[in-house]
Amino acid sequence: MAQRAAPEAVAGTSLDGTQPAYIYKVVLLGNTSVGKSSLAYRYVKNDFKESLPTMGCSFLTQTLCLEATTVRLEIWDTAGQEKYHSVCHLYYRGAHAALLVYDITSKESLSRAKLWLQELEKEFLHDEIVIALVGNKTDLAAERKVAAEEGEEFAKSKSLLYMETSAKSNHQVNEVFTAVAQELVAREGRKAAARHPAPPDLQEPRGPGPRCCGL
Image (cartoon, rainbow, N blue to C red; front, side, top):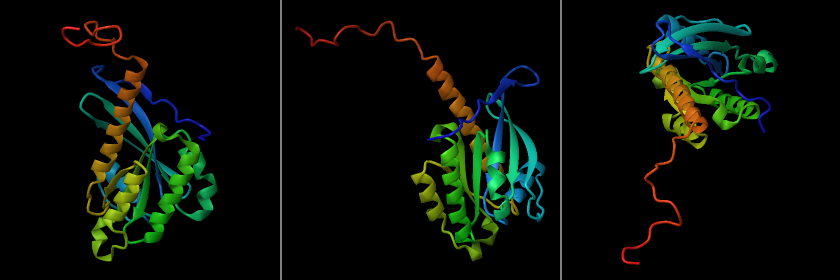
């Protein structure tokens, strides 16, 4: 049972007032050295840098325009060291999405990502948060220890988004954040449809149902 629900997205309109806009909190979770900070930095700054371990949490923002919506992602990059584990829930509280990042050259990092998923499942119901499993460091394919199929099958079994990336070579970094944003906006549409269902077709026959001709 979830203890706290994810908050509603902050909604408004774009600066020119022509389309809806949303603000979403996205957290990056995973072992130390899997490349969380590098992924966030590559996405926001379009650059790569080897990062020292994050101390506590760092914060970046990025705005992207989808077909008819502007989305602002507030990206929280959490520390992966075990000593920070007890306080990480303070950073992902109220998140709308989470990227569970592992290193494709480390099976242990995938196991750790699975544990993070268990933590999120204690905090959120399934439809309250968008979760993506991200296998990072595809530039080190020669050292791969986790097959893409293994990550993909686990993600499918848990109904997670899945993608492999490389912050260093900029492989599918934009794509994974865009996929998360698109799913968040799609959920807004489904929630709106549930709140305001379409009126029934007035031409639809009423009563027990259609009768066969001649009866």
